[in-house]
Image (cartoon, rainbow, N blue to C red; front, side):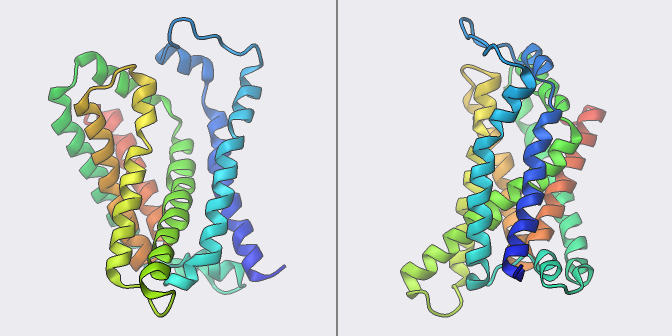
Length: 263
């Protein structure tokens, strides 16, 4: 097996682990927290089977994202140094070592930024909304947050989307020649961060039939702020650094939720 195929398999398996971690979610308990709209018919199939079926779409999207990153990242100066080293039989720890501290710092900063954004938004949200958000936040298992949020989402948004955006701008504005301008990468970070932010809006609509403007702004702004950090880390340090930051951010938010400082 070639190094390229091993890289794809390694990243795909890492991302798929995050998708599979959704099986840890208790659907019956979730329905208690987030009641279904009146008149909604619950499919008469086993909850576990329903969860397995729900994994199909994200798995397809993950496959496309990993393929895009494997095919295009090296062409635009982006990389997953540790994964690439492992796939090539080189010392992967030497490749990830320079990414650890920046990732941890980025994660702490990202977590604090989200907590502060939540603190600013909370006075403008109904008490019932704050309570429901808190219950939902604490309901998602920590392994799912780490595996899906920390790994799968980075493969989708940074390795897949951000890489594709930089490549498209390189093709459009530089005819695919040379290194992409820094402005292209910055634009790709901004766009992918915004997409990351609005990608969390379905959760708001799941929790509330008519989410307020403040709530939607909080969801988009808070997640976009972290997206900027992750995008910069991917560009300057490597994909694994963005993953580390994402994991640490979830750890910060999890700790803050337990202490009552985050919803």
